[in-house]
Each structure stands twice: as C-alpha cells, then as structure tokens.
Length: 448
Ligand SMILES: Cc1cc2nc3c(=O)[nH]c(=O)nc-3n(C[C@H](O)[C@H](O)[C@H](O)COP(=O)(O)OP(=O)(O)OC[C@H]3O[C@@H](n4cnc5c(N)ncnc54)[C@H](O)[C@@H]3O)c2cc1C
Image (tube, rainbow, N blue to C red; front, side):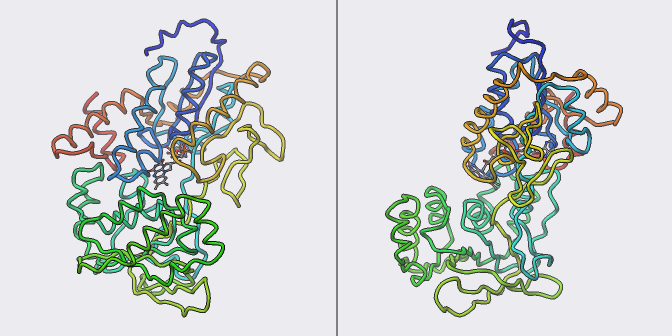
C-alpha cells in the first residue's frame, strides 16, 4: 500500500530507527501502522537493508532469506526513508539524532563474537563466527578470510545453529553454492579448499545442544560427507535424560546423533566429526593455527589434540557499544526497561532499544517481531509526554551532506538489488550479493 502522506492523526512527530535488521524493520512496521508519525527515517550502516537476514542467514537457505520481502514493506510508505551507508556514532551521533527526532529506536544488533579467552586465539587461522559469516555472506566490512593453504582440518567451536551453518558451508560441495547469493570469490575459495575433516566441538552433551532439528537433519543429508560421532558421548546421565524428556529438540538431537553414530562410514571424501563434552583449552601453533587442545568436560577422559589449520569460535555474538548510549559490557546489550533505554538506571527520554541489542543474541528472526512490537508499545505510550525534538530531521540531512556521507537511498538500494538479481539470473540462481562497497556504489551510480 502506498501512503499518500496526507493522513490525519500524524501529529508532526518524527522517529529515527538505527539499524535496518529484522528488529528495526518490525519496529518500523509497528510505528507506521500507528499513524502517529509524519516521518520515520531508518539509518543503516550497510549499503543494504535487512541486517543478519542478508549478512548472517546462510546463503544456502534462500527461503529464510526471503523474509526480506516482508521486512521491505515498511518502505512502501512515503513517510519512510532509508538512509543506508550511514553509521550512527561515526557519521552522525546519537545526540544529533535526538535533536532532530522525537523518538530514536536503536536496533543495531550484535556485530562481534564472544571470545574463548584461551591462548592462541589471536593466531592467523583463528576466526570468530561473525568474521567467517560476514565473509561468506558478502558483508562490505568483512575482514578478508583466507582459508589456510593446505587446509585439511577445520574446527568449529559451538553447539548452536551458527556453528552448524559454518560446519555445513565448509564441508559442502562448493558446486552447490554456485546458485546461491554467495559472492563468487568466496565460492571459488571454498571450491579450492582441500578440507577433508570438519570438527564440531560442543562444551556439553547432545541433550544440551542448541541445534534445531531441520538444520541437524540437513547436516546428516549432505552429499559426499560422512558424520562421525563417538557413541561414548551419547551415554546419557540423569540430567540428560530429564532434558530429553522435557525438550523435543534435545530428544531429536540425541536420536539423530545416535543414528549417525551407528551409520557405517561410506568412505566419503569429507567427514564432519561431532565432539561433545569437550572444552578448548589452547589453540596450537607458532605463526598460524596448527592444532587445538580439547579437555574433557565429563568424567576423566583424556585431553584430545586435533591437528587443525582453521578454528572458528561460534559461541555467541556480542554487542558493540554505540557512542552516546549506555552499554553493559558483560551482556553486550544496552540496558533498558520495556525497551526504554536506561542511563544509570534512569529512563533516557525518547530513546529505545530493540532486537539483539536489547535482549542478547537469542531467538529466531520472528522473535524480533514480538520484541519490536513491545518496544513500539512503549514508544506510543510515551509519545504524548515526550519533550519533543529541539530541531528538525532536515538538520541531520544537512550534517550528513556537510560530512560528505554518501547516503544510499531506498531507490539506490532497489537499483543494487536489481543488479544482484540480474547477476543471479544470469548464473541460474539466487541474486548474487555485491560484497564490495565501492562496487555497490558504482552499480547504483551506473543505474541511476
Ligand atoms: C550467522 C547467523 C545465522 C542466522 N540464521 C538464522 C536463520 O536461519 N533463521 C532465523 O530465524 N534466525 C537466524 N539468525 C538470527 C537472526 O538473524 C537474528 O535474530 C536477527 O537478525 C536479529 O535482528 P536485529 O535486528 O536485532 O539485528 P541485526 O539483524 O544484526 O540488524 C542490525 C542492523 O543494524 C546495523 N547497524 C549496526 N551498527 C550500526 C550503526 N552504528 N549505525 C547504523 N546501523 C548499524 C547493522 O548493519 C544491521 O543491519 C541468524 C543469526 C546469525 C548470527
């Protein structure tokens, strides 16, 4: 539905949303629906919207990535603008936004990784999941990943779906990735990889793993890959039995792992090994990763040393502070009550937080809808009593222009999207992500 901008009921209020991931865009939908705002501007650091839906969800999961079509709907309204390629805290401050808008909703998610805190974590060949994921999804700010020459063994630490995604992408026949959104240089790097063994290391047992069932079944169905599980890891203690009785996912994980442990090896070229009850204590190597030492977390099983050239820790994302906002280092979130940002325990009038930055890196995409709706309710409940803005949104536009910030508009994004789709069509697959910012801006300029 196209909004003609002439509705009554909008009382000249303006809102800024910071971060165009699912949380920000669900908040946008709720605020648009309220008809209480004349203008809603969505600021986004990347040149493209959708946050982790574009730069997180695995390229070989196109159906999940398609949720972007729903998230895009907020931009159909003429009162809504997209200001991409604008990093809040760098290009414009939170205080400048507060001066220009009555309401600021921050939904910048979590960009960093939790660390293991073990020796060797800094060695070349050791990455956080966010780095590897940003690389294979084509995030413009991704640190380049070089798969080590002679890579035969990769180790992924973690027992959640992000760890599964990474293990699957590393083990998978790269030919099947050629029809995905993955940038071609990444597909080429994966195709050239000589990896034969991918180790998935979990701190606890299968009954405590956070894998979801479809992703687990998908791993077991990979062509050309054998699954290796030690039956000793699947012996359940009383706490495990209880978890299995209470949680369907826990039961599925245990059952699936049992089935894998009983499968005869087919002699496939690649293997994924699941190691439960193992705690990384040291990443080995002088100038690059050569191995990893894993202590036992159960019983008195001896330590295990795996030769490996690539270690990826997928033990949870962690937020990065936005200058001008309070931040809880421990949880990596912005302190809040019902979405209202708390500074020193006091509500900061007009500033809200939603999504991962509010509640931590948990839940699926749809979890952010409930989260954003709750926060929008707080916004709407407060709106009449808010002090109101000192200036106008246009002052923020002027600041960005003065600072030579190249703003990517919604029309610009649609041009980039059309280009990506054309490239995908030509390759007989999904739209191919343009991973380089300069190239993305060139595409936009050439189309404009
Ligand atoms: C690797 C991975 C795979 C996943 N796969 C799935 C899946 O298959 N299915 C599923 O349901 N869920 C999946 N999830 C979870 C899902 O992606 C999250 O629940 C969701 O994206 C969180 O939404 P968010 O809006 O809080 O954060 P994000 O999606 O991270 O969005 C935050 C946005 O803010 C922007 N931003 C950050 N800093 C600034 C700044 N300073 N200024 C302006 N903008 C900024 C970012 O660029 C980003 O666009 C996955 C998560 C990860 C990490």
